[in-house]
Image 1 (cartoon, rainbow, N blue to C red):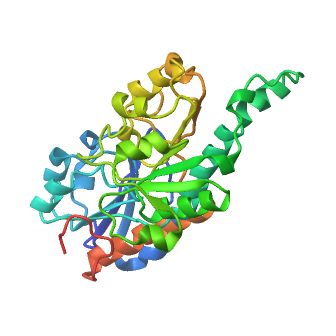
Image 2: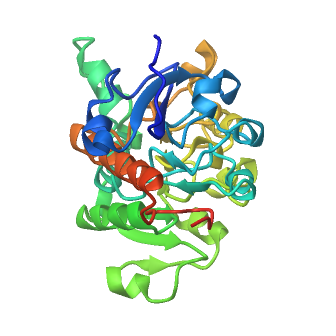
Length: 331
């Protein structure tokens, strides 16, 4: 498609070619941005796909799974802000952006309810073995082979890694269902446990030893990459379930799939998985695995909120207004 030459600022939306999440007309973004800038949308797989038109943009809105590396950022000619259309910003080299004076922003609050709900949904599906029971019922039979995995929630300990917005929302939901709720978060000030009526443990190892359900809610960074690997999974009870609605690479993929195959875990519910999506039929056939499509954030309402916030930040970037949710210290 040919675009007219314009002196207006340019805001470019970069959607992921493998699984586009926005609409071709960028209806929500255009409504918010109005006549403050020209809005364009491109489908890319990696930043090797960035065209000269994209690199001449004044602001970028980037969907998840479209990585923006130091090499790609170095090609941006006049970009003022990169807005990650979501909570996580691990797909953007924030240090490289800072070196080039480009603000990186995210949308930290749009999907709090949805992700917490999804974590609980995966937990309930595991604790009540919904999928295996569904499959058995559809065989027109009633042999309940998974009875040893069916659990009473009030007897279980729900362990949370990371008590931020989503971790807190998940904790409240789990508590309401009758779980004993514990958490580990070395960066959280004292007192959150008392405010929420849950228990704090000081080490990850202790959290793992106590948890019947482990739910991951921390960001992905150098410290948390493979935070849960072979050693950590071995600390869980063989009857434990693992839920991840945060970032795939927090849990080492080969470690958790092996643990499931060898019966070292009772099950896992993974909305996100390292090097997603699942790559082989063997991975997909892993026993006692529920996998969803990095969709925990999704709802009609959450996507409207997310896209509206991203568009508002992009508009502020090209009109010289203060930016929200800057994560790399560039004002």
